[in-house]
Image (cartoon, rainbow, N blue to C red; front, side, top):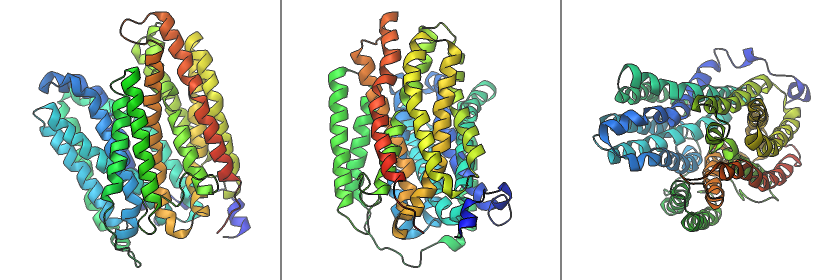
Length: 470
């Protein structure tokens, strides 16, 4: 690639055309299904519980979806190396459709949970394989534009997913919400199988055994951490997080001992490796997403006296900042990748002390401002992390890098949620907590997440200091 080409901004016409437009639409549909469906159940839960019961299992409708997403995402890069894009994406879409159908027919909550797990596996696979598809279906020059579309669509889905669930509950049935996504997944399954005929088995296909043992350790680790974030008590939650992290360490260790059958890129958490720096920054900064999302709406409602809708709108400010900035900056040339990544990470870091002040003290507009700042930070950086990682990674690791980014993002979010739960419980937050406890939680959670940003900034430095290749 010439220097002049790298320095020229990418126009939308270069990707929204006959050559790449259909590929972008296909990837976008997969992202939409995963992003919107992951939030769908939130507005349908009251109707689901009223119909089939299972109040005590509500939290697991979200947790099992997340567990399935992380595990499937971890295996996606390896599956793409072995089978190409066509078969894994078709299977992921089919499993997503099957999960929607199971949920729609669920007579009891435990059947619903099976459906949500299948949806998580399919949706997580679609998300990770969408990143793989972006890195393989588009030239490196267009990767940031494609990622800009993905990020924008993700933010839009934060509004539309719960809205779809609410509309089906209000004017139809909650089962209709699952059928709505099942039909889309069926169309995607057929579309992927037909459209990706040329992306079937790779020429240098890897003949590997499925990594059952490593996926076991990953599943156990994510399960413990997810459970720690649901059933909060100081001792039990702390032990579950510790055991979960130990299981994840075992996963990273055993995966690192493999060569061709690795699920993650080589040395994924090594600061001596620029790709390791990228993985660390994704994991660490993703944990900070919970600075606002876990307790922000609760604090805004209880401490400041605003209705729950206002807390939801403040949450939406983060999604808006993410989507708008990602869309606006996605045409930046490769020579600005480092600057955009550093700018994004600094904005996220600065948003945390902003939350630590504004959440307990207000005013509301200041909380919204820092929510936009945090979202803008992710929007500025996330779009360019994949492009730079692909430029720096060995060609044999491109699929692994692409699949690892969304997987470690969800893993970081799960760890952050459990960590926030431990802090809030230690501060005395329960059903009988007074305003002083809620005030403490409001500043403690974002402030205590600052060490994660320091780890992330170290990873950022390791990532951006490396010389460009390719």
